[in-house]
Image (cartoon, rainbow, N blue to C red; front, side, top):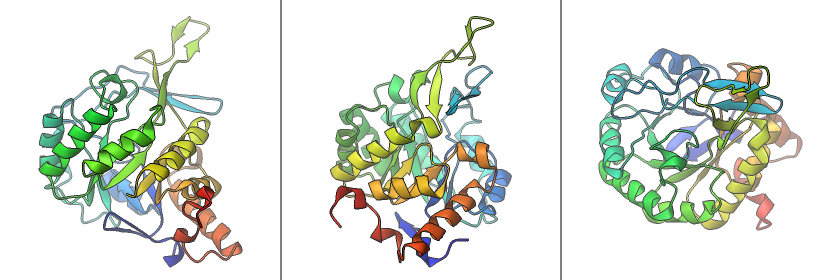
Length: 308
């Protein structure tokens, strides 16, 4: 599979390859994280955690369509205290683990981060990007540059671990927001999350398929949007970027890296290609690089900007 050709240093984390399992896919329990780490990921992201337990949106919470999927999970999770017990020992996970912390206010973000920072995670991601949960992300004003900067600054005071800010491709001024959080101390940007919200209607019942009515669109359908956002962010900041959105093949990962990504987030691909999706993507990426005599990912990173 991967070798030094694909290795990445991201915020002090050594990744054997640039694939990162996206939040909420297999990171729901410690055992699932351990299992995912044996399937070729460069790093893993835990499920997003809030201060108090959340039941999330009512089912159905996920649906597939012709060129992607939609979800409206609503950040269902057991809360930070239970997670601190569940993830206290991650010694059986064989690659870096990124925590994912969420709050409604900068103070609440800081509280969750301060607790999560005591876990054996290598970095903490802050999703400011959800398009379908009231009080969070796009439905709370978290992606306003000033508000995003306040949350970032609070996070940096709450832990010494690297902070990754997760933004949505739905943000029109994504480069401006990325620049604001960089100035506030962010160590990396993840772009992005699902886009939308969107809706699918069951024409037999005349009702929305998802229990919440609307949800975030993800999968191959949004890849061009995500690539463009990574391109814009690369022009706006100096910190590393995790490109995420519709990456299913090695070719998709190459496109994202050429737009400027240091690493790539993978989620929906596990639905299409199974648990070893990240290993398959890494293998395809490596094969392509060898055929074209690339010696490192750095040689192709940002090449679409015409500066190399």
